[in-house]
Length: 95
Picture (cartoon, rainbow, N blue to C red):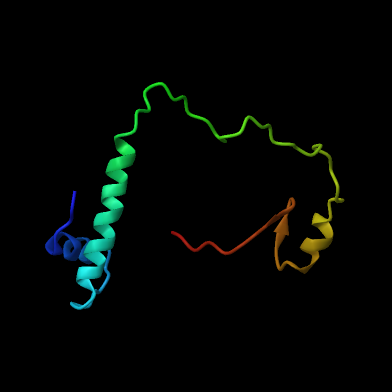
């Protein structure tokens, strides 16, 4: 499928892009080649292909879920202008 100049100009308008008239032909050619490549990909037989997260059969290594830093909330909140029960109090901005 090849795109026309009018289609590319419409896409540029929707994307709020300004294209110079001298660049339109190059953009039409590049976008048309992208659309043709997508058409080729859609033609590939994928009925028997199951979805996968990674092409290799690997498992992600995870670190142990352990606390590594002490809780310093009270020390950090000493600089706050207003704190109550461990949360910052801010002025109401929505009525």
